[in-house]
Image (cartoon, rainbow, N blue to C red):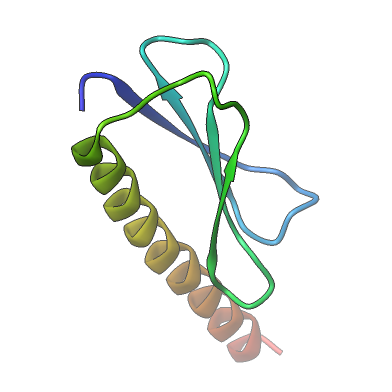
Length: 86
C-alpha cells in the first residue's frame, strides 16, 4: 500500500507489541492497533484528520489479523519453552 506505512512497536510495559499506522508520509501515526487482555485487536484512532480508502482499511485489517496470530504464537512458544525448562 503506497499511502500506508505500518511499524511494529515493542514496549516493555506491555504484554504484546503493537502497531502504529501512518498515512501519506505523515510522521505522526493516525491509528494504533494493540492486543487487549482478552487477546482481541483494539483499533485506536489517534487523529481524525486523515482519510483512507476502503482497500487501505482492508489492508490494515488483514495485516493486523496476521500480526495478532504471530503475537499469540510467540506467546505460546515462549510459555512452552519456559515450561520445558522448569
